Length: 266
Length: 271
Image 1 (cartoon, rainbow over the protein chains, first blue to last red):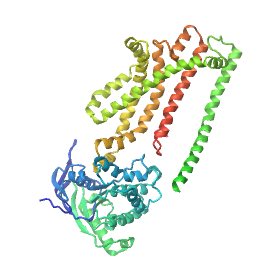
Image 2 (cartoon, helix red, strand yellow):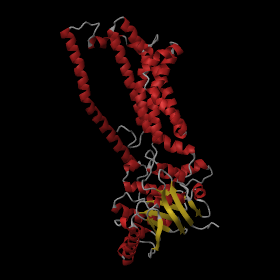
Image 3 (cartoon, rainbow over the protein chains, first blue to last red):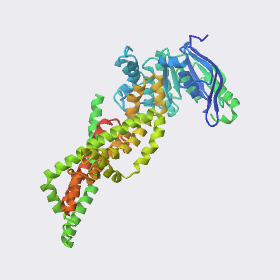
Image 4 (cartoon, rainbow over the protein chains, first blue to last red):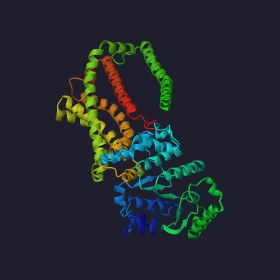
């Protein structure tokens, strides 16, 4: 029976068919608890983005089953349970920042006129929460990369999805901006009860953000290790200098190197 | 507060851009004035027969004296061009919409559209005149045909210029097909659509005039051809001047509409 709580993946396999078939994922078993912050870490080509898209119902698995609160990913997608933040901000350049954030509500209302439209105040509050008060009427092109990504975060949260899927959202940003956004993400997330699945190739980022870390090895993607992060919340940058932090980072890095020696430079 | 500030900033940059544009145009204007002046001087010094090459002064006086008559004829031409432009561009855009949604039709038709584009429009014009008579119809049809291809190519490209992630986002939001079209595909196609419309706007005027050459009793093309039979080069030059001015005006109208609709930064392709 599908578990009505959390997100469960059983025996997931994904093969992309083409001139030569590529197996992206092999026998993934995973349970994500409600309200958990889970990080998926691994080198490029380990299928972590694919895994995220499977959970979101954007692509179907070749084998195995996924249950999102007892529903199939497709059903959960139709119920708009997911928020998704891509590596690119994917903002609509013709809409001002505030209108970009309000876009999901407009679409939900087109589909169902009874949809309770979140008051504009809520979208504005979210923009304030991500530190963009005063930029409501700017166009995306007028913002920096980090600011665009914060708009994307606000847009993903505005309809209060139960699950927030993030695909290397800060991967294209410089280290300082990334640090700032990590902190801001945690602050905003603590206001929500959403489950977060966060894909990254940075072990440090994963340890800093997550409750639990799933380490994936490449070709085909498989679970190398699942580690608990021994820090409570709220967190601040100080924990990055704690011995437990550096130990965990070193341990996970060691696991990845043992799994795929040619990827030693992560 | 901030929005007001942004507005004044925009006004400043707008004025700045106008000034900059004017300065950018100065060399081109000087070349134009220089050529006209040289033409006038050569005309006086060398003494070319006036029925071969009238002097700029004579052409200008012709432009002024026969303004009303020529403007009325130009009005017909522009009516044909505008109707053809709207018809051809509209049909092309709708075809592009169909192409984007039904891939099979695109594969079946698009190659033939490209092949048809290579047929010289001048060669089809007499045929259309035979089929449709000497009235408005063949002129509109030729203007429409000549507008169709650049619009089809640009619209198809524009409607496809949507990132896979943007489509995934719409799927995540479980957006309807109508939402995906009107909220995503249509606005992101506009920069391409307008670059197609700008090409089409100049072609439409050319198409209408070419159609008038092959059989008409009014329009600026008719005026030019009729004047050529009488070796009235003065009138021919005046007709050419009016039709170029109209073409430039048409282009700038479309360009102005583009500036109005593509208001977001980075929207216009040629910038």
